[in-house]
Image (cartoon, rainbow, N blue to C red; front, top):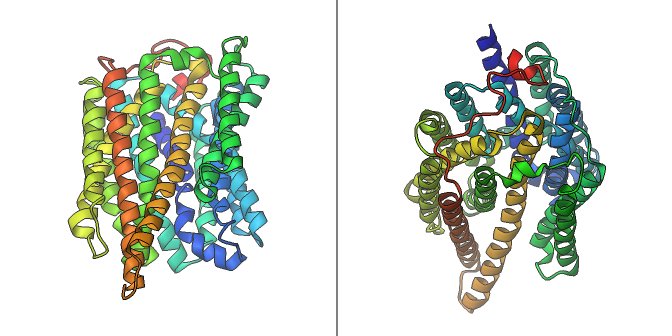
Length: 490
């Protein structure tokens, strides 16, 4: 019965995590329809995406510590109900302000939900073999969620309405809530967990400033006064946060979480991988829809092979080898394969190149990235004290969110700049303006994708140098009674 409960718990946790990851991309394809319906300006439409990532990325550390403070099951269930309510509010939006506010609320509850989900997974599966299988499923969801979101967004927008990209979260969240109520054991707060209020203010303000700065850089430019102020202020606040954490009685982010060499390597790897990946998803979507003229549904279906490759990489490669080989021997080759996929994609032209370039590139990207990400998840959250599992999980999610924000802003800025330069250099009498615009756009995408290729190579280098564990770590407290029943009852 205990085994059955554990695997059903994995279903509940995976469902919640999938919902959180999906919402980072599912709205992308629906955005043009939402913009037209709510009369959003081109300058304001980015807030549909930014409001979510800003609240999510900025509040993750606080959400992780709250899950340690009040109990992971309680935080998990509150996050699910809040996310469902915010999604319903967004789907019923009558104006852009209401939609932006709902998306921000989604981010707030996602910041509660994501760390508690990952820490529940970490403390539920302590047997190395079962843990590898569970993390294989989780890694596949983390990797494939963005692509599934694009497919779901295309289906819902084309056959129903853009609002269903938000409404769909309500039944999913309620099913996950019912599962959590029945399956997950009633958790208790850790007796030594306390909320570090100064740390929460400094850390959240610093993260909000950094994420907001990178979000604004895409539209304003890197030299804009607001962008520079936000980024510099964020660095100062995070510096003050780090200094305070060394002095706080019960820090928001215990130094043991970030002093461990394996976890630091995993955090840096995830940061660099998501810097490279988030912008590429956006480029491929614009390439397939804007250049090749594909429909939202066809575009979403184009990502299915990559989703399958991600599932195979996580469950059939990483999960089977995680307990047998050194983690870096999974991460480094996986990232090199993914980088090779980007090198193929970076050579597309204005003519249709899905079968010759995009498809093989996607397969390599999915296979390699999922193998590396699943192993990184295990390293980032393993061998951490049970009372700090939420903080470690939140740090992993923060690295992912910050990497995504940096990558989207940086790569989009590079693409826009290169596109503009190409147009200026090749404009002239007798030039087909429509063809030139397509060529310039694709050239900008290609250059930015080469930068993403470089980010993955750097991630492989960091992983190869920093990560030196002989085997993936096992959570502390295996075989022992821990303060929270969910760690053992499942």
